[in-house]
Image 1 (cartoon, rainbow, N blue to C red):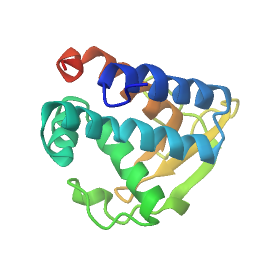
Image 2: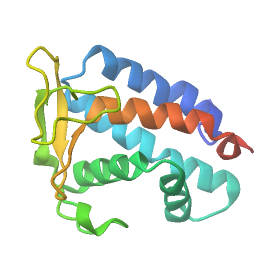
Image 3: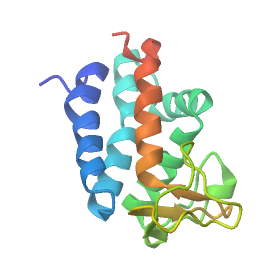
Length: 157
């Protein structure tokens, strides 16, 4: 398997991981794994394009702002606490900030202004970032995956 190919990476790693997460939306393991896999897509693109991974991650974030949230979750989960990030308001995010809670209230992944959702929403993994914004991790992963698939320039090898 050529995991150094962006399309193969998405098709064989990222998409199946997101599909598993859809089926188990309250799984910490899958929330973290999916975030890490999606974030490291930037490494694959960097390898193919002979660029630095952080440059590609910055480029992707400029096109897909939610990629910055995935980057923060992945690094916080991997390093326990986020001590540096291009978006300074996300510094301080810790792995323990990932908790189970209600899915986002709205289809764009947002919650009511007080951070709540509808009572009948399913339980998912959520994170409140240090900038006091609540994120439905499954929704964020799905949105980033969909947006990555639209960025054909990232798949050019």
